[in-house]
Image (cartoon, rainbow, N blue to C red; front, top):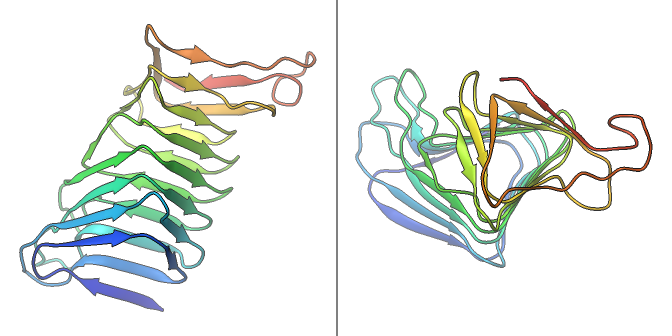
Length: 212
């Protein structure tokens, strides 16, 4: 089942509760209308993907469609439990656009993917990606001084691009094997919080695999 919310003009959605995506979702333009969606996932809000295979917020939905991007802000929680959630990703050959910023929490479960297109502001919140999960921002992005990236999943910025860390890599209280799909640049305020409890990588001490 595909659920469709068609953007025909500019408007604002503010989520203060649970926005639960339980099947494939398209939240964008199904025709040739112009408009920009402002989506605010507020402090008490949760955007959850609990079902479906592919959910899209922003961009075009038809070959003749006009890209309708989203200005997305997250101060609450984004929880991608399954499938692919893509925000501002150009479909049908269209370009990426829009913007995405987060000072809240982002969770990507095992086997799930969150892909962000357009302009990604430096991450000032937390992004936790479970093993086999993926957070994807092709072209690279920055983890701000207040940001925390954690988990044993993959942060994919694309071959030759860079994830710049000015905040903290790796979480506390567990052993992690983080993967970087691209290059890693450690800034002057960067903290790599490696935990050591033995001599076996990935099970007794943290490690980071940088693909380049």
